[in-house]
Structures are given as structure tokens and as C-alpha cells.
Length: 212
Image: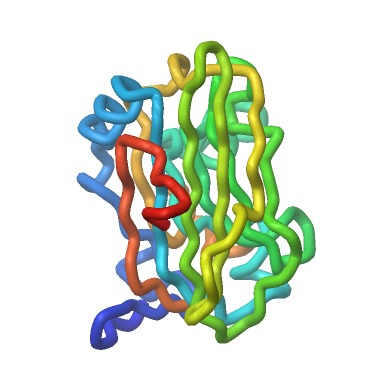
């Protein structure tokens, strides 16, 4: 990871200590984030980012831009960082292609990984700066989910994803850890993200289209 004026660049795994991940509270949980979001039943994740690849490692898996995941590694079949999470903002689909933005929100009607996941149309261009916002809002026993992917200088139109599905956030896990740029298990093969991150923010409410 390289620190630039106003943003960071992720080029390859292993360049910050032993991994590319940046995360809240070391190995501790993101308790304040959990408390705020489960109390409101709503969340927004906002990023300004520039993907530098759209194929291969760093763009599939999906590549983790931000995730609130299980705090430990584990053997195949066990619950661990790569298969248990509360939410994910990522790039790409496994095993390909890598020109989608991927979002997962765990709910009472998804699996423990937040699947089935949702994808933007495949239109990301490597080297282009994007404003990405994904939101969820509980409405009775369902979630209203929106995703905007807007290139720099573009006008904010209708969301790339606008859907409603059954389930609430009541099964989120308070022990999960917030990670940026990689999975919590320091994946060096398929899940680290490659690009420039200019801004990352979370909110305990769903931003409106006018706010985006």
C-alpha cells in the first residue's frame, strides 16, 4: 500500500506488514458500527475509488473493498473470515469477470456469507475514478437495497441495483471485524483489491439519491 496525497494505492498483497488489509481496532470487533446499524436497521457504505485492474487477482473473488467479517481463519467447512460476514462491498464475481461491483448484506433470509450477492452491470473501466454507494433499509420484514456506481463527472441517475428482498439485519454478529482492501485472513491470492481508495465512509441510515 502506498500513501499518496489524499488517497492510498493498493498494488499487491503483503505490502503493509504481512497483508494489504486495513481494519478497525486490530483484531477487535467493530462494536460501535454493529450497534448503530442494528439499532437503525439501515446502512450506507460510500467510497471514492479507482480500480486498477478488471481481470485476475485483485478484481475477482470478489476482491474485498470493504467487509465486516468473521475474525478468524479456519479449515475448509468451518466458519471463518472467507465465508461469514455482515456486509461486503467488493469488485468482481468468482471466478470472473472483474468489471462488476458486488454487494452483500447478511439478513435472516440470506446465508451466513450474505449470499445471494448482488452485482452492478459489468461496466467498470480500469483507471477510472468512481463514486460507489450501497445502501440497505429495513421495511417491515424486508430490505430495500440500492447501489449507485457513478464515474467521476457523471450525473447520479437511477441506481444500478434497486431491489427489495425478504429478511432483516437482526442476525448480524457483533464479533465481526471491519476490514478494508482485503479479507481478514490476509488472503494473498484472490481476495485482495487493487486500486486507489480516496474515501471510505459508513452511515447508520440509507442515503437518498439526492444525497448521493
